[in-house]
Amino acid sequence: MIDQDGYFGERIAARYDESSADIADPAMVEPVVDTLVELADGGRALELGIGTGRIALPLAARGVAVQGIDLSRAMVARLREKPGGDAIGVTIGDFATTRVDGAFSVAYLVFNTIMNLTTQAAQVACFRNVAAHLQPGGRFVIEVMMPDLRRLPPGQDAVPFHVSETRWAYDLYDVATQSMSSNYVEVVNGRGGFHSIPFRYVWPAELDLMAQMAGLHLRDRWANWHREPFTSESAQHVSVWEKPVLPD
Image (cartoon, rainbow, N blue to C red):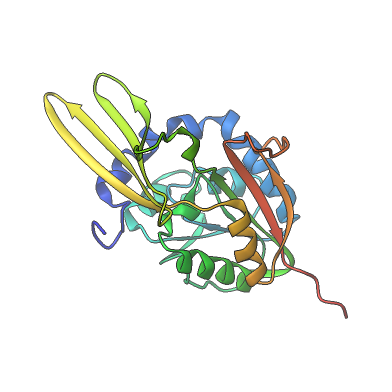
């Protein structure tokens, strides 16, 4: 941990929106929000790892009451600075275990955020925590990458994903433990900087088992927010689990 904000402290938060501008493009955000509005069905939404509000703010602008959980005060401070940010309730804490008041019709984790929980036990706890927040019939949505292990030849553990004259980024994998990290090297005015963020990659079938342990069942799985079919060639998936409605 870097500080009380975890791996998303002031240094990362100060540049987060700039560095993630591609995924904040309306063309990327609108399909996410459209799906969440439909799944919320007039109810409340809980975002785990709400960050600077990339999804929460446009979702709230569509009339959905959004509540968030996030460990990083620095990231939430950026949310508060944006129009409408003060109207979104945020609880500071670990989203695997932190509870908030009330029941929700949808909870969601986007952009690989489930992997910020770096142990299987924490990921299992997250599913149980979400299940406790959902009303009967409520849905839990996760957007997460497929582990890129097919790009690893024997003896190699690194997968580069950005290379330029001043910035290099690569993922490191440990297939024995399912641990990985995203690593960034940047040179500005002749000075080099480096930071690394740990993750735990997770397979769809493993997520389904975690859901089952929490009393949820798989409702949908798509390759993306446009709801294209998920196949063995998909680079990511958007999965929706549902909390059963108990008979009267």
